[in-house]
Amino acid sequence: MKKIEAVVRKERFVAVCQVLENMGIGGLTAVPAQGFGNHRNGLKEKIKIDIYCDEFQVDTIVEAIRRTAKTGFTGDGKIAILDLEKLYRIRTGEEGASAI
Image (cartoon, rainbow, N blue to C red; front, side, top):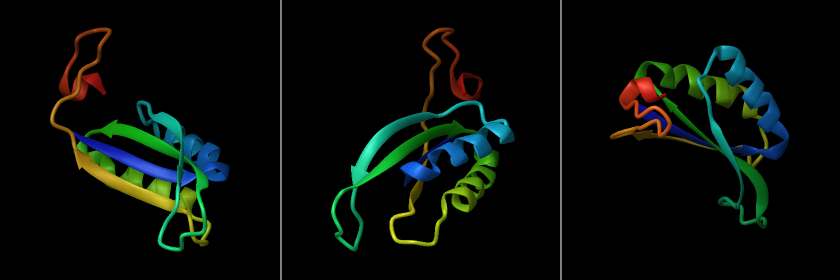
């Protein structure tokens, strides 16, 4: 299992969500974020998206986010893929891939 963390522009967030929903992604968590990059041009409003998925889904999800979030200008965001040791669904007690 993997966790995908993506930080995207606020104005591209809805489009990214629509693409992921149309792909059948099981769910995501989004929170407001602020940050700056190498250009140090002040804090910018962003949205951080967390997605838990099976390893075989990672490339498809990442490509969809990259394609949809890209404007071609500085500040388009970042995507990180992390190994997920364990995952539990609180309501049902499911764990692992069935908890996604």
